[in-house]
Length: 451
Image 1 (cartoon, rainbow, N blue to C red):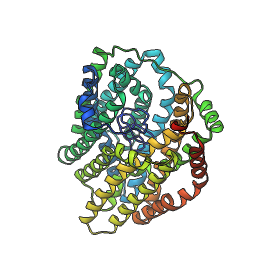
Image 2: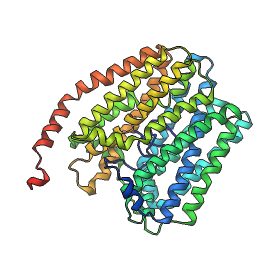
Image 3: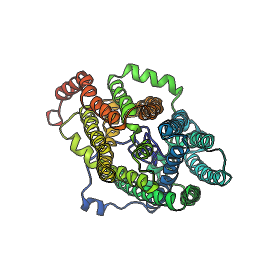
Image 4: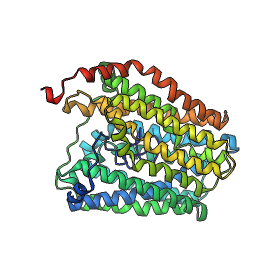
């Protein structure tokens, strides 16, 4: 199962979405086309990325199916947001609980075995969901149980998959490979979302889950039959919850990044998860239209590396993150205007807003990760990033529940305008002090040509 709160973190698993294999994102200059052509990636790495992309495309089906089934299971249209928010919040709770213990499990089982077991668990979960749907099991209890199980499976591998990817790269140009794979996964998400929407409307959710299982199995077989030649080393964090509090308390940059990340998780991250009940309230209950909107979110995500470079140019990473939050608010404002348009044109403007949202919001994680690890020794960065992700993971399900209940209680356009006003005006005002502090520190730091 893939969630917006984690879109682009581990093939759709993240707390603030950026890399769907779970790799912590970082700012990077885009490779030129000529340099990309010269980069020769190991064959096993290419196969691994290809099968990951196939699995990602299939994984969009269950994500969309969960949202549509949850929305349709509500007794009234007013309850659709609440039911959907509970389904995704339960998923995020499982994700947040399992993530800190993933490195420990990887040390016990081995990173490759853990990743393979997690992916295979999702294959079995898709097959089990198909059987339960055919058996007409009670829908809401089934969705909650499946969501929790999926979150636990995804969380268990979240910190391991990027290490597996690096091992398959064989020490090659991992930066170029990561940029290429992010774009490929973005395309896979777009294709998967559109295809899943058509399948849901024309065939039914059973076919979606069955196809997801079939497309996920080749990656499991490859991991077990063709492990990387380079050993995967995993460092676990002792007492992760206590370590999280200690890191946040003692590192100012991390503390400010967490505050901004928590605000994003509460106010903006649930947008993708809750888009199906939003469309349902506007009269767009067809699966194809939900898939179309998710496709535009994914298409925006493809250009995220370009946005990172553009917004980050000449700015401290934290300042760039605040600007990304404000621009995401503009995208939400566009979607608020779309809600007031007649049936038909509203979908066009919603699609534009979704693409802008995907392009800008998913860049936020990159800036926050860089802020968190600024001036942190390389050997300590893993603990800092783990603390950051754990803190955001706590806020993500709360934000999803908040959105679900408010969407059912307030007019959609009023809710969107209120969210946009907070993230465009109020949140940046609250962040003025850390923005000035960090910009001053950056100006006072010695430049390379002065050393």
